[in-house]
Each structure stands twice: as C-alpha cells, then as structure tokens.
Image (cartoon, rainbow, N blue to C red):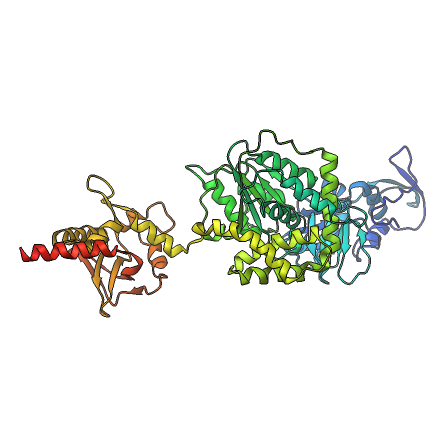
Length: 608
C-alpha cells in the first residue's frame, strides 16, 4: 500500500496503459472492496473531512482543501482530486475487460481503467461517515495560530511549525490534519530563521523605521515594529491592532510599504486599490496581514467605509457572513492585521478610531540616505523577527498583561489597552529577552501617551458629536439671515424680548425650543421625530428615513442629565410629539460679561 504523500506503483502495464492479469478466481470488484464500502485504507492519498449540505470536503492528493458537489464527483473531478496519486485509482477501483473461451471460462483479464462510480461511492461514503463539517471553524491557512495547549502553530504553506506549549522541542509537520484542525497546503511563504536569534535584528529594523521623519519620533518606530510583530502572529493573539500611516506626498509612505512587504516575504497581501469583498476573498482562511496603500477619502467613500468595516471585524476576530449566488451563505473568520496609508485619513467613527493607531509622517530630509532595501536583506530580517516571536511566545501573555495594566493606570480604556498593549507587547518580544517589569512598561506607555492624546479630539463620545453637529447647523438652511442653532439658542436664553421671541420661533419651526422644566432647570428640547431636524441630520448616521425612529434621539438621550419628555411636546401649532430634554448647560455657555450686559440692556428697555 502506498504511503500518504508518495505515489504508489501501477500493476503490470502493457503498452503504457493496459495491464494484463492472468486468469484466476479474483472477482472484478476486488479493488472496490479494498477502498470502497469499508473505511478508506491506511495510507489512502485522500482524507475525507466531512459534509456541509450536499457538498463533501476532502484533503486532496496535494493536501489542499477541496469542496466537491455531487456533480463534481465526476471522472475528471476524481482524477484531479487524486493529483499525483491518480495511478492508484486503477489500484483501488480497476475496470477489467474479461476474455472467456467458448465454455465461458475466463482466460485473461485486461485492465482498461478505473470505475469512477466506485471511487465516488467510496469518497462520498467516507465523507458522510465523518459527519457535518464546518470549514470556517476547522481550517487554518497560512500564518500563526494558537494551539489548544497554548503553544504556537506557524503555517508556512509547505510546512507547519509546532512550537511552545507542552512540547519541549519545536517540530515541523507536513500540511494536513493536525489535532482537530486542517492546515491545508499552499504556496510557500516566509519561514522562521532556523536557529535562535538575539535581539539585534529587531533593533536594526527599529533603526530602519526611525530613518523616516515621524511626528512622534520617540514612539512611532517602536509601534510600527510592534505592528510588524503582531502581523506575523495575528491568528494567535486576541486582538489585531491596526496602524494607519498618514503624511503628505513624498513623505515615504510607499517606500515604507515596500520595506514591510520585503520583510514579510510572501506572508502579506499588499494592494493599492481593492474592495472589501476582494480582500476577504483573497485572505480566505489565512491570518496573513493586509497592507493597503493610498486609501484616500473621497466624495463617495463607500469603498473606504466598507474596508473600515472589514478592519473592525478582523481586529476582534469576528465572523464575517456573506451570501452567495447559490443562496448559500459563506462564513469567514478574519484574523488579519491591517495597515493602511494615505495622505488624508477617511472619516472615522469612534468605533473605528478606537481600533487604529495613526502614525504621521513629515517631509523627508532631502539629504537623507535611502534605506538598504535589498530583497535578501529584508527577507532575512523578517525571518529572524519571526524566529524571535516563536521563541518568545511563552512570554506573550504575561508581557501583554503588564502593558495593559500600565495603560489602564494612564487612563486608557479597554480598547486603547487592546491596541497599544498588543503593539508594545509584540515590540517587547522582538527587542528583549528579559522578563518585562512594571517600571519599564510604564516608561514605554508614557512614550505613546502623546500619540494617544493627539487623537482625543476624534474620540469624543457619539452623543457629544451628535449634539455638536446639531448646534453648528445653520438655520434656516437656505437663504439670508442664517445663524447656527447654537446662536439661536443663545438668543432664546439671553436675548432681549424680541430677539428671544424670534429665536424661539426659528427653533420651533425645526423641532427645537428652550424652556424651564418641572425641576426649575432650563432645558434644550429636541423633537424625537421632525422633518426639519431630519433635514439637518441628512447624510449623517444620526439621520432617519420616513417611517423609522430617529437615530439622533438615541444618541442625544445618552447625554448626562437628558430625559424623555413626560408627554407630547408642542413646538408650533402643527407640530407636536415626544421629545428629549437636554440640560441647557450642555448647549449654551454664555460669557458672564455678555450675560450681565444683556441683562442691563433688557432692564433699560423695560424702564423706557
């Protein structure tokens, strides 16, 4: 019997195609019994994985994942499934031409091929015996993965390195079924350096990154090194941080992409113009990083926003569901680290901004020496970094916990600790062999605090941004006399009698007003549903469509002290409905001197 992965010999072959067997009592179905109704024999070149719906899944003769429909179990489909072992088909399922004499006795049997129907029965029966199988939960493509014993599995396409965990020694395995997971064969990518490596290559890479002119020179090169490390082990970590490189033309963004691509060998998907669907279809079951160059904002940023949603899904390792033309859904669990670059960063929601470390490049010094970008040098550096991560994997959890604790002490929330903690922990594994201590973690967190503070304006709460959008909207939207809602509110609160009345009339027309509440406090009252407000929020994610509840109501209700109206509120003779009451201090902050001058002017008018 042939061993798995090695072609077996043909029987005696005549003229290169027809084998002649002597007449005997061997039945014509002998080959079918060998590989048919019984479980597939040991050393069989095909591994049946299971079924999903009407389709069967196998590891083919090249250790690739194959999904075959009933129709695809054709003669050619089976030959292709066997790949380099297709000569075994006549071994297991021979088709004989039998010659008999006048008395009906067999005088010779000539092998003329194989019986595809028997091969199909054997394969589909073996798949059915394995039961229902979900590839999205069991297939692990190229990249790093966490093993059940806490160790690391690195899939290089043509081999799987099992490291750490309970095994004292690293071990390379051929692609295939390992534990309960399938590691299918693929084109070879970067492998770890074959021997242990000190921290010098990581220091060299960080020095290389430092040759770019970063706005935050103290931390940006280290964070980028951390992203490179996290990208190499993305499938094994809980959180996959995203880095966005921004800077004007000529700041070296594209060159930086080439350097990263060179260090990762074939272990990266680097694209300049792609859609979200194209990216997740291309990454498939791998955990390889994705680098997106020139992802610029535009008037129609649907493509960029689709990619941002994909990035958000990949960061947490969530499942992506997509429908197919055959009305069956496709499942993908994304575990890739993303890096993007652009002159300008597209508009980011709070959820997206919290997942991204934005690193800004300034103009390069004209006398700056270009970096050494020889492909062999970059690939060797990447291989050595990967070796560092494999050897240091046992320190990962403790290192990450210390950085997360240090970030928490600095006031970072859970998401900030995920992003920067993972970046710093990956850089630490690459640069140092010593165990991390809390003092050093605090020092490195201090370096990134400036970067985090620089993004605080983008991290304001959704309700604050919603209110700010409303207060800066102009009323009326068209025509003369336009003023911001905030200015109209100011007049309604502190203007003279005529100005206050005119301001209230304007606000009421658009579903807003100011009035005292039952508790004696003054409130800014905003209708929960109003055509005028819908116009002001049109084109934002706080808008509403006809027949739907407004999103602005949900957001504004989260403002501290906001409350729902006790009943319906009248804004003008034709407009009544429920409303949200916002404490006036969140809306209007008059200057004390202006308030005093306004009060004096009103007193003067009253006296006159």
